[in-house]
Image (cartoon, rainbow, N blue to C red):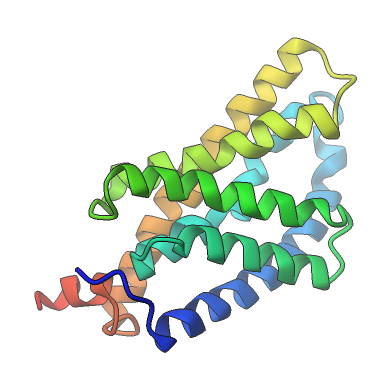
Length: 191
């Protein structure tokens, strides 16, 4: 398997980044709107976090190239920032880390394993970023129990939405034929 990036790969990362940057913009609104629902136990809102972690996992499942998770997650965060994410420049650092951790999961398999279990592990790894950093930077006043609940919620949401969700989405896209130019699409047709 070649690890060379083609023009199509770069364009695909850019398209995924723009699509998810817009999704992030909408998810930022949903996050804010649902905040009052979690007033009694704010760490439970972590269960909604996984949407922000999809690009890195999905980018790698589609492209299967070193750097795909990192590039897709970072560029999606950059688009989100350009659209006015109210967390400021911190979204860029989060994007780097939320792409780097799934990247490391795929790298551990030498960029050869892309099944459901690896996708879930990559999603869970991405969830460690907000699970650990958010209580430090955004919720330092929380108790240790709330911080632990936040971490578990972020990892669970990310494993389910970013991991399993990306695996299902990549499979559905491949099944439609739109990914025939990529390994995931060629697997579908047995090529």
